[in-house]
Length: 147
Figure 1 (cartoon, rainbow, N blue to C red):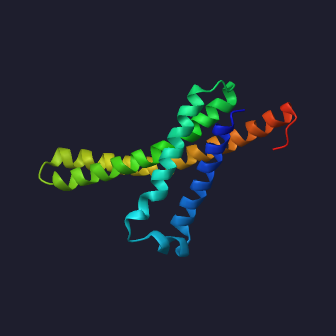
Figure 2: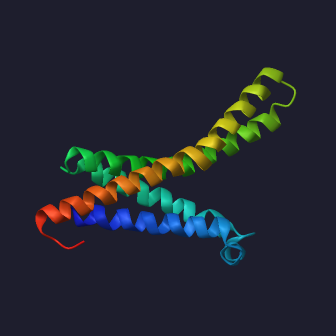
Figure 3: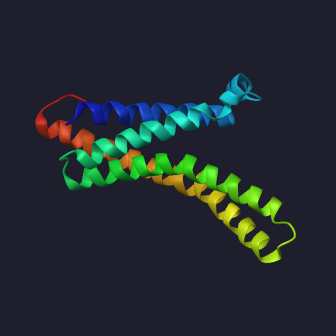
């Protein structure tokens, strides 16, 4: 098993926990709210996901684990991508106030991208993490290593 992949996988999981704390624990929210550092955990999450994606694609890991690692990394990368797209289409909807069809399209897309970034991508990430952990443990047992 590639140590870099495992390292970035666990860094990604830890960063996800930090993001959850940032979203749901008031003491953590207060640390970053109102500053430009608000997006820092999401940016780090994006880059860890991107590194894991590249390492996983280049690796020779067997299929079930590779699929879960790809799901984990693509979901991590997509969170920030869809947050940015959500904001861009929201802004386009505001700017295109007078052009009805463009405003409706921009509003629909900003809602869809928001839903993907807040609901779909995190669910995909959790499914990927759980599946990856399952196969990492299974692989370690087969190799006689203690996890």
